[in-house]
Image 1 (cartoon, rainbow, N blue to C red):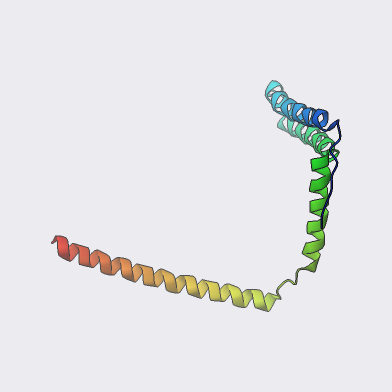
Image 2: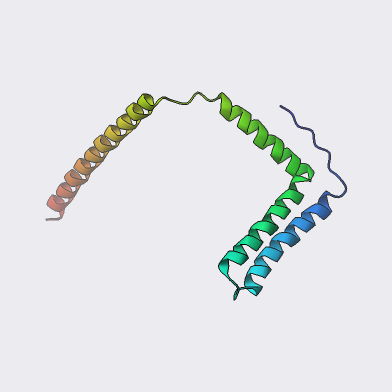
Length: 120
């Protein structure tokens, strides 16, 4: 799927607004440090939501939104494993990890014993 976006002459101004809103979040959080954490978080969430909405109005934002919608469509096409397949695959991985751990432990013990023999 090809997405053609046209850059608006106002995109730069919109990105400046987004950066200003995010800077207001940081500065406001520091300035209102004596206020309740709940109010500061709500303010940050509100300003971040406005910044996100402004960013979505740009060409890059529209392209990102198109990508997200396309990703959701692709996720619906995925054939997810059944519970039995998931359990079997998990057990194979656990057994393999335990076997590799035992082999590495054995090699470590053998090499440690050989080094202690060589050192004396």
